[in-house]
Amino acid sequence: MSVESTTVFVDLAERSYEIRIGSDNLADIGRWVESLGDISQTIVITDSNVRQLYGETVLRTLSTIDTRIDIITVPAGEASKSIPMLDEILNQMLSLQADRKSLVLALGGGVVGDLAGFAAATYGRGIRFLQIPTTLLATVDSSVGGKVGINLPGAKNMVGAFWQPQGVLVDVNVLQSLPERDYRAGLAEVIKYGVIQDVEFFGKLEAHADLILTRDPVLMRDIIARCCQLKAEVVTEDERETTGRRAILNYGHTFCHALESCTGYGQFLHGEAVAIGMLCASRLAESLEMIDADITQRQFQLLTKFGLPTDVPADLNRQELVEAMQHDKKTEHGKLRFILPVAMGHVKIVDDIDSKLVQAALN
Ligand code: GLY
Image 1: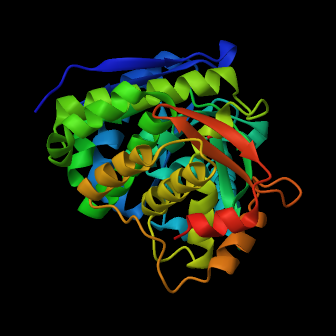
Image 2: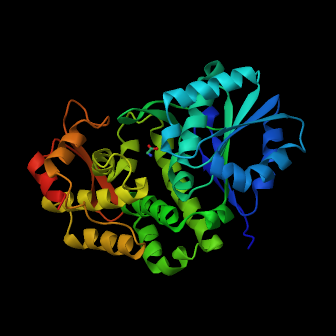
């Protein structure tokens, strides 16, 4: 099914760019590259799974324009977001004679976007890059706002940069090929925008939950566009996360990061850990008498409807989880900081919460 395309503008002065959301539009990327002007070479960075699915279409459209084309394929999976893989990519770019007029085209999910974006940010002190996110999570979150980077062993996203792309192209039909579990995990970040910024949007998700699960292209175009717009508003106000505004996007993430690290990053997909983390944060807000129980209940019902996990596994040691939160890179001097709801569609940052209340919110 073909849907009319829509555009979200990310307003960042000379770093502004468009997110173009449509269907069956991967073949438009050639013209977009051409329109950037003065591109000597396009280096497509992708992973082994995505290359098989969409590599051919992207290479074909690039072959119709005047650009040298190269492709670098990394193994699919979080392990690729590493210093050795970055080293390999940068050296491959060097042997492909990449220069300041080379363009990186990141084709893939969050891992590829973060890794390829960081390679673009660092090679030759920074070259241009375009993004084609291929997972729902990458589409509504990691491809918006220019956070790129890699992991250190035991410290997720610890090395990185703010490096905005020249543009982002989203093909909603790509969602059809996602495994069910990955699609649902992406929906957790979608729900997050409703809780933190837009009560009406949250209501829309509740009203259309069944259709969302069918991956209806028109509805998903509108939902993706709204998420990107909401995130773009935040990024415009606080591009480098210095004022605290951008931190609201981390709703549920302090709990989420602790869950991910205490389970060795293997048990939960990121969106699944976000789902559990949002409910913990909401319970914490309840215990601080910031909200009534119905705000948590509405999130619980929607997350459950989307088949997302809602409980911290019983076998995880609560004390260890709280300690992991204290070591989170977003923690300042060991003080626990949370983004907590004050109403549906509104959150605030709360610092220095008693760790006993945090531990209680895990249950
Ligand atoms: N994913 C949170 C941010 O981009 O700030």
